[in-house]
Amino acid sequence: MSSVIIKGAKIINEQASFYGDIYIRNGRIEQMAPVINKRADREINAEGKVVIPGVIDDQVHFRQPGMEYKADIFTESRAALAGGITSFMEMPNTKPPTLTQEALAGKYDLGRLHAAVNYSFYMGASNDNLEEVLKTDPKNVCGVKVFMGSSTGNMLVDDEKILESLFGRVPMLIATHCEDEETIRRNELQYAQKFKDALDARFHPQIRSDEACFLSSSKAVELAKKHGTRLHVLHLSTAKEMALFNNDLPLKDKRITAEVCVHHLHFNESDYENQGNRLKCNPAVKTEQDRTALWEALLDDRLDVIATDHAPHTAEEKALPYIKAPSGLPLVQHSLYVMLDFYSKGKISLEQIVHKMCHAPAEVFRVKDRGYLREGYWADLVVIDMDKPWEVKTENILAKCKWSPFEGKIFQQKILYTLINGQVVWEKDQVNEVGAAQRLSFFD
Image 1 (cartoon, rainbow, N blue to C red):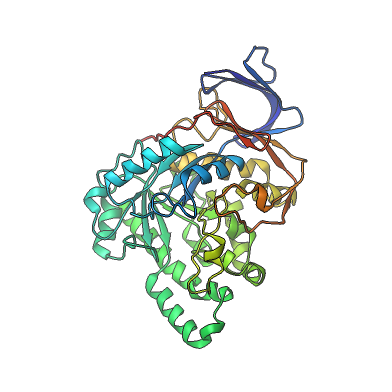
Image 2 (spheres, helix red, strand yellow; image 1 turned 30 degrees about the horizontal axis):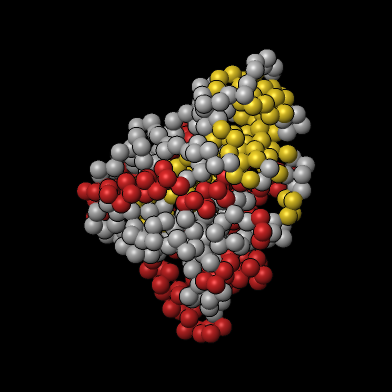
């Protein structure tokens, strides 16, 4: 493998910023120092630029197998690459769902063939596959996904005995989608009867209510405390849920961790007026009070990780009537940009962004040799021009669905280079097809 040296960068890493050079050889960071005088096959002049570790996105839906008409690993991982995401963890609600070890192995084959960035895939849980779940190897699979709420196919786990067994017997991290199905169904029936054809996306936060979220997430936390489970609660969306999480332990010692997604930090219920079904997602984007509470919890470390829940659908599907329109947004290409935009507005520091999007996912999931800029670690990193405005347009969206809730938005920063395992895979708004991606591995 070739060598690369990055010169004169402002490096953001481990809650600090400093200027220096990074020397990369055989895919790993060999040296970091104020000045490095070594020859390399490739030199990147990063003076006036910022370098951060590659983002680890612990929650994406790339739709393969079974729904390739709207997304696939090839297209969505390249969108991720353009957004500075160097590793993803993909969800099991595909067609067929990832409920057997055979199906899981098949997805890893797809990742090996098509992924532009490093990859891992969750094992899925259902009411009837506990023994298959228990065969999962925690050294090379990111976690077990439990839908404790509405889902597609055979993925909803609502059997109390199965939940007890999962939380009590699974030795690896359990990641949960928490919404109470009974509450949602009751709300949906009530609103459909009341508003009939006038029912639209503006009612989504009331149907998928804060009560539905809290009932389910509090149950997950209760089970995790009872059994000592490693629990990661995904895409939290309500102020009420923030009371379930604490900041009294360092991240490395937490058994229960929490995630927020960029769209819940950026949007509130007023945005349904313009976005309509494009903003429809599960759990729903809720009130400004909820968004404020999420920010407070993020900044005081009750919320540990920022992710995307990238879940693309076609524009035609999103244009269906509210009840029929599917939930989910395409976000991997723009999530880092959204957070950098918040940095520009003084909402969050670069060090905090790097911690929540790079370091924390590596800690929560125990990812080996990634998530930090450290000598000996794999060289996954991003070079950013902090003053190069650009506009999100249809023609520069890489996701297969070719739309984004951020179309028309002008971001002030620009990702110039993304390196995967020491190889320059994204530069000059283009993907270099170099086959650099690897399967993620984990500390048991």
